[in-house]
Length: 155
Image (cartoon, rainbow, N blue to C red; front, top):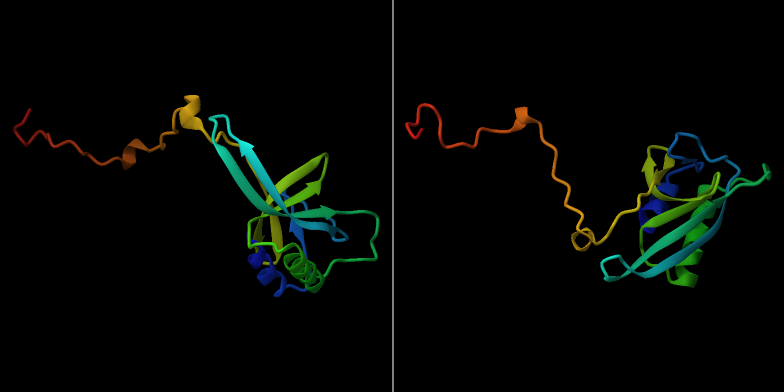
């Protein structure tokens, strides 16, 4: 989800809820303690230099049950961050601490935000000798592409 998309969703909500990949909800007394841009400049295992940028939200919770972050307040925080930090409309990555700090993608479903699992991947499979995954197909779905049928006389 991009920064512009979260603002659109927030403007339609009365409360904010984030759901973890296991279905549990982030406690409703969470705070968004950071909004920023993270730039990653790296070299992959194949020797290609790469750059990636994401907008980072950090969710934090404490035993402060008297303060709830309302959608309009988060929109204000995002808009201030856009102006002051000159944030572009990039994909959002969410940090949240469970057992350890996790990094999640962000999606939306009806009335709440979904923290989605992120995966690592080799970015240079062709240079590392990792074969490209072949699509799995059911034999029943394959069409007979043979031009030689019993009636054709070619056999």
